[in-house]
Each structure stands twice: as structure tokens, then as C-alpha cells.
Amino acid sequence: MAKRPYSSKFGNRFMNSVQQQDIVILGGGAAGWIAAGLLARKTDRRQTRITVVESEEIGIIGVGEATVPVLAHCNALLGIDEYDFIRRTQGTFKLGIEFCDWGVVGNRHFHAFSDYGHQVEGVSTHHYWLRLRQAGEAHPIDDYSFAYAVAKNNRFAPGDPQNARYHYAYHFDAALYARYLREVATGLGVQRIEGRMTHVDLDSESGHITAIHLADGRKVPGDLFLDCTGFASELLGKALNTPFVDWSHWLLCNSAMAVPAMRTGAALPFTRSTAHAGGWRWTIPLQHRSGHGMVYNSDLWSDEAARDALLGAIDGEPLAEPRVFRFTSGHRKAFWNRNCIGIGFASSFLEPLESTGLQLIVMGVLKLLQFFPEKTINPVLRDEYNRISTREIERIRDFIIAHYYLSRRPEPLWAACRDIEIPDSLRHKLEVWNASGQVSLGDLESYMEPSWLAILLGNGAVPARHAVAADLHPLEQIKKGMDLRREEIRRSAQTVMSHQEFIDRHCKAASERPQAEAGTA
Image (cartoon, rainbow, N blue to C red; front, side, top):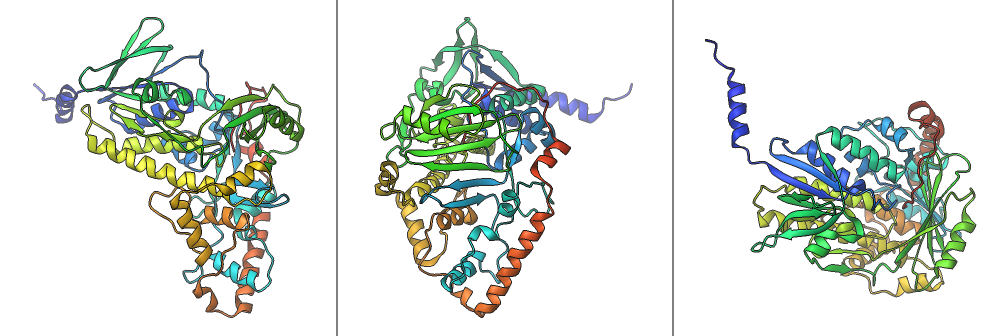
């Protein structure tokens, strides 16, 4: 009698010894389905069973249309074909954010997903730029960004992945992306339950969530719960009473108004953020329309004034009435409390500037995978997850505050932003910058030196000095080298195909117009 293969016998023994863990994700949208897909991809499905509970009645907030490059990494982890994703979500590509009228009216600068060229003998480009500026050279720092040279000419191509001169992100329809992610996750074995939660069961001793109850009487038990219910924070905030750390004294905007419109002209490969008297406005180009929105402080600027400014600035015909939502920037004191992790707006929200919504979702899930618990949760893992999450969002908070704090505009909002007592961590960074031209980066920074340079120099925060190593070469030699660099960037950018041509050739969407949603810059 033939023996069974050893691997089969071992596999059966292993399966019998595994204690399956039930992961329940409350809420769909991008947060719920990104979490479901990544967990399905990166955990052993013999040990985890993943269920998403969502209600079509609730719908989603249409934020997140403009993203940062981490989403490309997320999609790759999910096994998503980039061109199919762009087609299915009416997407376009994003090389950065153009800031108009920030700092002072008439100012224009670009936060690119790239650097300003390679260092020379260990010295960053901006130090040579500072030396030339001191000598009277007037070329803007953006002239040394290859991504900006490509973007301003409305061009795009992915480039060599092994030697990319810039990274890129996407603009897309948030509702279509959520549906697309649902397909991906359910294809990986994630179970979906349609239903609206009414209440939860808590263990009398540990306080852990043991099950959620739905309006139709069903009960969904679990071992680990992910709260993806957005601002409602049904589990982390309400069921577990996790306190909220309010940052509205640093980030003064508390309202956003969004409206889709017919797109006029070619789809630009960047998001545009335009400052106004009472806030700022985003413009996000998709294949089938444009997304527009206004961010403001409702105590300093009325909804009516924001609406008039928003609609008055749109070129294309609005496709719906502007929609308002209120928010408070900050985070739950614990991102992971007991056996519940908040993902996305359920645990934290930073105002829409710099497209942090989806960034925080992806980062939250990737950290969960790094510290993924067994059925019995080790508090060491939970505490480390919370420590890292808090430090990361504090660093991002400082980056966003800097956009406002550096402004020299005279209007009430901008004057108030200059008058705040900024966090010590940001004050230290600005003091080091002003004294040395160095960007003092701490641990767990999401925005590295090039991003800080774009905002600091773009808003006219020129430091008192440059690195001494930038003085080692004669000024004429530096000028010649920087001239050659600018010319090479200009010439190389001209060889890149147009953004529209790239989309038409590789990932043009179907012509039908899907349901319109809002967006963020």
C-alpha cells in the first residue's frame, strides 16, 4: 500500500492545530476594503477569517481622490494592475501639488514627489541654490525639480522603476475605488455582510468587543475588530469610549465644501491648491470630471461666502449642489484600544491638505500587519502600535501646520494661523532651518527633506545661511553646474509624452459618467 506524501500528512496535522481568528471590519469604503484586502493578502488564511460588515444606507464620504505615492505601494501589495485600476476608477496621475497664492497673493510653488537632484559631494542641491541666491541668482528652486518640469508641461510617464527620477500618485473617483477594492478583497476570500450595526457586546471582564449586532437581528462575533466607520467611530470612539485628542487649536480649518464639475481642458498631472481669503480651494482632475472643494474655518468665513468663492472659481458646469462636512483635526488617544483598531477617520483626521486621508489608512493597516496579534493580544504589541501611530501623525501634523504658519497673508484666518503657539517639535524644526538651512528630521517622518524644502522655500522661508561645504567651490563653477542641471532637466522633460496621450494609450476609462463624489488635495 502506497504511503501518503509527507507534505499532505503534515498539512493535515497543521490544519488541525490551527485556531482560527475571526477579524471583523465594521465599515466599507476605502478604509474597510483596503484593510480587508491587505489582511487577506498578508495573513495566513488558514488562521484568519475576515468579514466586512457595511451598509449601503450609510454610504461613504467622497474624500481621498487625490493621493500620495504610498497608495501605489498599497495597490501593488494587493496585486492590482495599475492600468486596470486607472481605467476602472476614471483616474489620472499625480506628480505633486501646485500651491497658488499661498504665503502671499501671486505666489506659486510646487510640492513634487521627487527631490531637487542628486547631492554633490554630500551637499544637497538647495545649499548651492542658497549660495547662488545670495549672489543674486533668481531661479526658483522648482527649476531643479524634474517632476515639476514634467508636470508644468502637462506630461507624464512612469519612468524606469529601478532608477525613477520621481514618484507619482493618483487622482480617482472615491466611490469607484471603494467598489473596485471590494471586488479585489472578496476575490481574495473576504466575506461581506450587508447590514447596519445597532449595538455591541462587551466582555464583562476584559471589556473587549465580542460581537456586533445588526438591525436585522443578526449577530457577528469576532476576536479582532477594525473600526472603519469614519467620523462616527462607532467602535473605537463610541463603544469603547476612547478619548479624542483635539488639534483644532493648531489646525484652524473645520469645514469643507465639495462639488464635482465638468472638466474643461486637459487633465493636469497634479493637484492644485489655491489659497483664498478665508481658506483654500482644491482642484482635482479626473478623466470624466473635475473635483473641487473649499476648506475653511466656519467661524471666520460663512458657508455662504465659501460657496460663492468655490462656485465662482470653477470653470466647468457644476454637476451637483456643493456638499458641506464638518471636521475636527486630531486623533483618538489610542489607535488600538483593547481588541479594536481604528483605521482611517475612525481613529484620526487631519484636514484635507496634502491628501493624508488614504495615506493614514494604508499606514495604519501596514503597522497592524507589522504588529499583528494572536488571538490573545499581547499588550506590548498594542502599545508599540499606538506609540508609532501617535508619533507618525504628530510629524504629519507639523508638516501641515507649517503651510499655514508661514503665510504672510493679511486676512483673519491667515493672521490667526500665524499667531498660534506651534508644537515644540515644529518650532525646533523651523529654528534649525532658519539658523542653518538644514531640515532636522526626527524618527517616523513621513515627509522627508524635499517635501519640507518645497513648503519652506515655496513660502519664502529662506534661512540665514547655507552649509559651509557649499563654499568649497568657486561661485562660477557652482553657477555653471547648476545651469547645466536646469538645462538637462528642461531637455529631458520635453521627451516625456503628454499626460493625456499616456492615459489614452494605456488606461483610458469607459465614457460613461459614474456617480460624482467629492475629494481632497
